[in-house]
Length: 254
Image 1 (cartoon, rainbow, N blue to C red):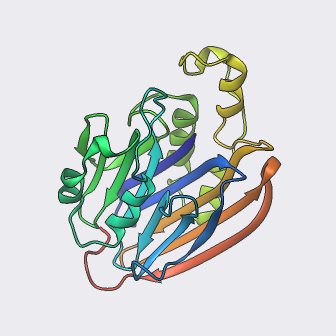
Image 2 (image 1 turned 45 degrees about the vertical axis):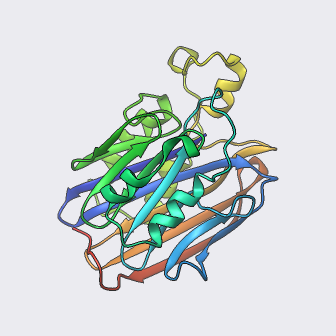
């Protein structure tokens, strides 16, 4: 389970803002957000098992993020979904061109957000691709627009926060919501209700699996702020990394 909340062109002063939780097994090795040696200019965390990333940016202002699509019937495939985000960030392809080049069956189920600085695009290997209009959105492990409680609650809190001067700490606070929704609001996917309760909050506190990182990205016209808060089992704060980037050449925000 993961969660990406984002506000896209909701005001002239806020071209793009993203708040995202990465939920994963604590035993799966990963590096915190850092500048990669290759592709040059890529800023992202790194999954040490498959080599990709769940969310990242580059110095030209490009953005990409991926979530798993909850589909237990999808067979294992050799290609990493996280490689999609990293490859886009290291390319010059437009969001649309990159999405149309993806061979969906090569990957297990995924949702993918791509921003080239001009168009914000959502695509998946579930047969959906669309250019997004300005507004507030939330994405978890189902299709964009699925009204899971954490998505609905997160979008509303993001909308309220964007009415004032938004900061990275505001976004991290939204992501730290660990309230468990009522059972009648939980997704019906054939899983035990106890499992759905455990993974239903925006912020998951677990000992073996839980929210390992909360990331806030705020784009301004010529620069961006990137903050990643890391967590140990039980949701205990582990450390934080922060970056302020002046975007170099290429497309600009807004």
